[in-house]
Image (cartoon, rainbow, N blue to C red; front, side, top):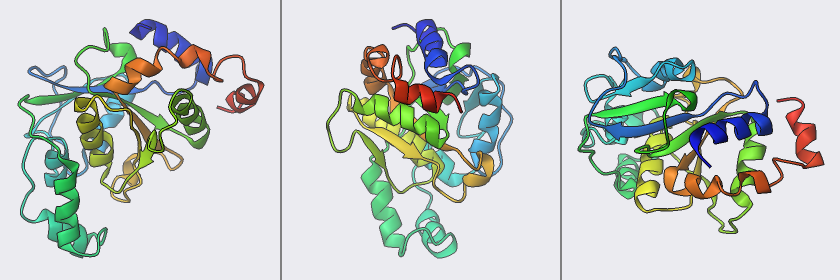
Length: 234
């Protein structure tokens, strides 16, 4: 299934009002002239959601954690204490350091991380993953589609982390492994002001998404009475 065919199928499955997902990936060139973003860079992704691409870089991202979790920098020395003692998201700084190490997020050798709404892209080529902003009803459809051909207990996972780590870091690492895990995210209180109160993220590494494209029209999203009832209120 090619990109344009997916968009048509997505709208058929989730309705014309469903927000289109974002594609994101590293590149040597920027696709947009994005201004510096102070604080959480998710506030800047609203433009991408509305159809204007966003190009992030080490200079554009104002948050040290954001630079870390997008692969533009090593962990700033202050991060473990800040996350633990100031934000109180982990009991000890050592736990934070252990978490960051466990992510195994590589430093990127590309200067830009581009976010593009899917209808603004020409193809799926050179993207790391697909990010959906999803309500509970949308998550029902997305998770069910993911489970359709995968019985693994970690087909969909929800892990601790900032918005940028659960969306970017985990997806990038999984895609490099050619893995199958998809990620629920945006649970972090720090990112919540920049997303809808009834939204979470559902992120699919491109390695998995290309497989899921072949099963989309086979699963309950098409021709299922149960899903049609949910779809009516999307």
